[in-house]
Image (cartoon, rainbow, N blue to C red; front, side):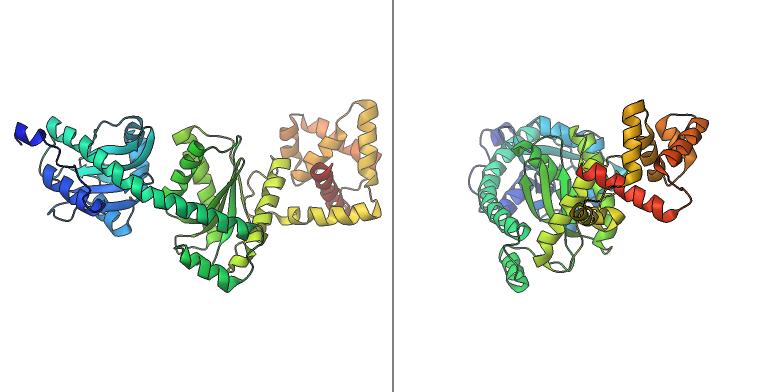
Length: 413
């Protein structure tokens, strides 16, 4: 290109849409071009090119960048680099994910990332003058994306209002709910569940974008509706794969927590999901179950750390029902009362020892390890516990009742 081509900006004007802008960028730079939103969903791509690479083909077919490509770009520092600067960034090929040489630039409004332009260097290497033109193209794309997001934000507000109606049980007619979903552009699913991520701090706008980014680029679980309640991100999710939703949610939760830590330095995330149902009018039920999972995990941090789904809570599901019955009859476990009183008078730790022993499945070696005591010391304590509380550790019924009463005391008192 000669110097005269840079005296004018070829990207001035409205272009009539992002597709036309992508074609114009491609014609000016003589390279294939794609334009993505901030969550790597494909918005537009140039149509007049003869060569490409597997990553670009997969992006066009799937209408989003493949998750394995996004992960590689994070690991290589490409996406953090694009988020930190508005300068074009040269990206070397990553053959294991089918990515050829590229130049990318972020589309931004001040510090907010609106999207990205990717230029594939197949037959030519972009010059410094080309990179300056690419920055101008990003400015042109900014205006297009701002118009696009204005309507998107209004739609998101409608989606959140509708979601809260589902969560609070104010929409109970299944046919009407599914009609509303279609009106909002959501295809009803045959299985849904409410998933809640709980964070150490309250969620602000910037943090919400990071959370939405991780969930959006994931390609196993799809969040149909989302809402924020203080430090909780609430999602109505469905499976994006052939596998049943209940089978992939735990893996998704663990992957989400890992990526939030690696990419944004966020730790201490707790998560839980309710039952998986085929009817949307049961959203409130799934939501209450997810809250119960979080309540159990918050109270029993060690014993319930690997529990995520309501259906996996086991006996924890019924502790509140048992507690209500016990409260009505003013029941108290005499063995536990005796141990508590003995500990108070003699400054011992027999109550906690019994709790650890039963929670460890009566495994003495594991219990001793958890309590950081010698096995002989544990044996002596268990003997004293049996004597003071009049407990027969060979009696399964008595041991089961002790275990339930210990958990109920921890949960409600």
